[in-house]
Image 1 (spheres, helix red, strand yellow):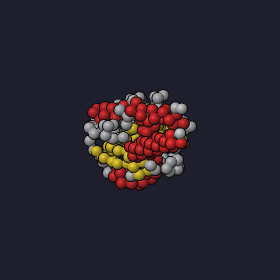
Image 2: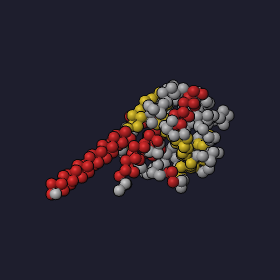
Image 3: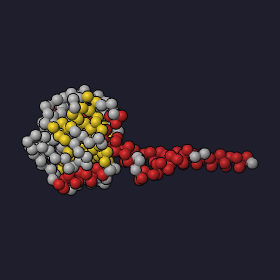
Length: 262
């Protein structure tokens, strides 16, 4: 009887150790997968400082490491959510003194977000005489030619989260031409008067983070760099939350449910 008791206790300890080991392994694999984010940047056609400065200086933010690839091709043939997590549309790459994007590029952005990527856009030059089309966005949003500002007002939307507080406490960032007349699907995150300077839009399996930050020269990029760090951290965290509810995450859900069973 005593030997049976000892054997039973040993079996219980062994099962407990295996469960703990499995949990540690699963957590480690998940952490490794979530810690590195690949960023495709459309840049270097208008300003030569934005993409190099960001890719050189924003390599690690909190628990995320960022790897960059810079492309000048406005058709965005590499914009595949299977290869990249974040798509950065740089300063003036869509509009700068007129429409500079391509139909292929607009379609590529839409597909990238639909497939689970997060697209961040920087301020695009909106000329009232020319306008700035937005076919790369799935919902209507209008640009407006406005004065440059550095102040902003966070909204009370719960989606704001830690956008302006982590890892940096943001007091100001440089914005120029801003956004207005948004479709109700857009979630305002920060405003200047009646204009949007940061907004969130969910689309398909991914999301857009629309901004009006201006990175046209080194001084402005350096001024905006703390907020750029926050933006990338916010985007990385947001994507992980989105992926957590996707069907391919069923293993983690199943294991959690198993642990709760008596």
